[in-house]
Image (tube, rainbow, N blue to C red; front, top):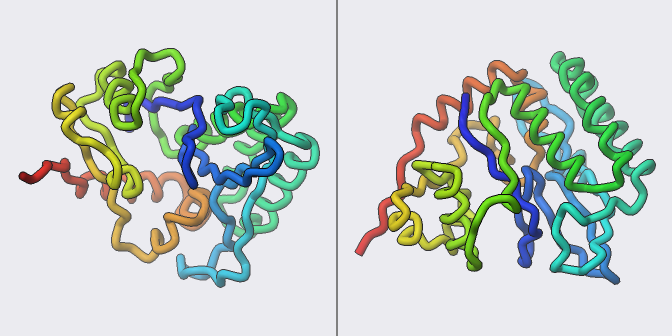
Length: 240
């Protein structure tokens, strides 16, 4: 697998957004927020769904010095030591029984080390890179702050895709509700909506961590499933 991943640096000003592979939910209280990677459920037998009461948010309390306008590179972890310990212990609690735990455990060493910087962006970026490495992704990581773009959600995304030389933009279901595909068409870029596979493994994919399928299937099998799903995606063509 190859391609380019553009990591963002501005936290989107809406209910939830995605930045460097992390789901961010805003808890507006005196300039403090909580960064929530999706919930961690304990694996069920043979890929069956877990009980909701066994799911937990892996919360990392985060301080935004400039409020909602804070760039994610400037967001600070409130208590790096406590967050590091909690992250490591929760992952072990939920997934130590998986036959693939040793792979994740070794990779998490690098992630946990990044908590010492006190910056949520460092933890988010290295965790995303490691996950992609485990899946055999061989693309290039670029920073959106270093690429030219104009204001406006759709315009900015179209400009970033164009700056990377992309021929297609993969868009989630949330983004498809506001995306203006004409801006991409003008730039010669197709828009491909991401559709969740019709598979029990992905039943809770929109609200649980990517670690879940990794620990169920293992890196190689998961990469194979993702490639198979990619082959089913179709380019969006506006009507009318």
